[in-house]
Amino acid sequence: MMRALWLVAMMLASCGYHLVGHGDGAGVIPADVQSLNIISHDEGNLLLPALREQLATDTLTVTGNAKTVHESAHHARLILQVNPISFTPSAYDASGIAIQYRMVYSGSLILEREGTAIWQSGAFSAQGEVYVTGDPTSIEASRQQLLTGLRKQWLRTAVGRLRSGF
Image 1: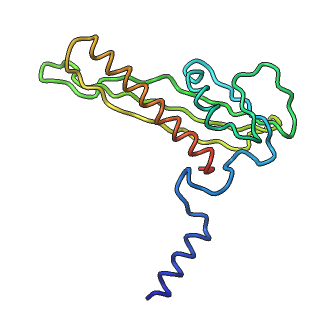
Image 2: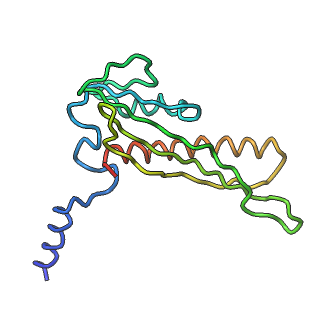
């Protein structure tokens, strides 16, 4: 029995099984890349400072939306695509008035090197609910608080995918 458990543990370790964001490797950014330029627009620009801070290391310089970048083998571009934020009613009361709204924050990442995509994250999202409990001012405050939380959650997922390769 003990031998079977040991065998299963070895198989899981050897097949590359690990939790997203907890890998031992450098992730999807090649080790010889010395500079990374993050390209984003609109909503994605709000994520740039936090993303630069989390990705920069002693050997990797991270810039955002740099205009003049010399393409070389030691440079890569990370394209940050954030979709328009969805804020739609998801529940109604007996009279047909919305009492709950769902917000979805979604997007994807593409890593390019020398003009060629070397990794794509695929679409991923963060979502949450806002419940109507008061006047429009409190609803808007709840909406902004949820949006801030969803940005942070989406950013954690993005960094986890970059570090793990998933």
